[in-house]
Amino acid sequence: VRDGKKKDKTIGSVKEAANFVGDEEKDQSGGSTRGVQKGRKRKLPEDFQVNTSAQKPASVSVSASIKLVANEETKDILLRLVTWNVAECKVSKTRPKFWTRNDSLEAVEQIINSKQPDVVALQEAPFDLLHRLSSQYELLGYTYSHAPGVVALLVRKGLESRGVSKVGPSITARIVKNGVPVDVASVHLAPFADGKRDRSKQIIAIINGFQGANVVIAGDTNMRKVEGKEPEAKGYKDVWKHQVKDPQKRFTWDSRKNWYHGDPKQGARAYATRYDRVYQQGKDMSLMSFELVGEETVVIPNHHLS
Image 1 (cartoon, rainbow, N blue to C red):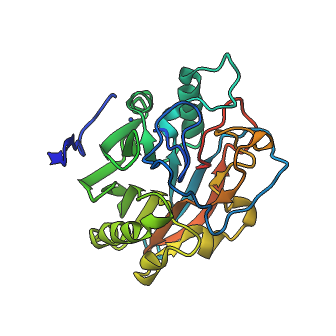
Image 2: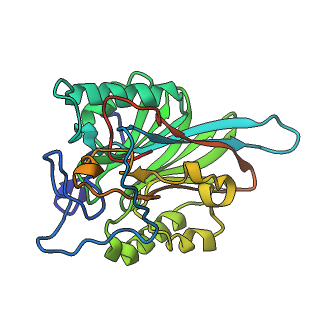
């Protein structure tokens, strides 16, 4: 299958996939500029927060635990999902000299495995990370977005899956656990403040592609504070906004304490926002827990809190 000039491999097992360099930000670790145009004015997100006393580097991923209830007569069924923009596992600007990209790969793999998820939604994923995860997870498919690496959807081996497909910059599939079907999507929507219209079209297309009663959409949406009305108008709940509301678990991009792009005390921008989101709908599904994973200080920061 061809998508423009790129090969679009959306189904199958791959042993080969992400350095998101920040919304409107150059990759200060020496990678690509993610479409930044020369002389282009860069804006901070509407809900940015500035903190001049940045904390130590942290590598954080977003783990959402979803409770599925088939009906009142059955026991609760837990589905755990992890979503993470892993930035191709490239090393950060503030890394120690001894730290290599292989160390980053190993650290990301360990964090994901430690949460024992049923579903893993990755953005800007490098193929060597997918290969590392292949011992425990089946790669349902991947596709491309505006950024390096791939948008990938993986499930724990042994978990039933059906109907894998690509919808824009997303991979979707139906997961069945203990007889309960759940449609899931890993997404990486258009970047930049002026990409709002594109993001709106993308998320609507993804939503319209689902036919099931239970749906979870997870990934790097690049949405600003005022965005997200489209999925909510369709009956979707923003998991953090509607069910978590804990300000300590709000920001998935926090360069005040995640120094992937450099130390704020030395000129790097320090702001926090919520690019990464989880949306869910379904009468058979309710949230059991939501957590930011990996907030403890580690040697290597990654550019997104996942």
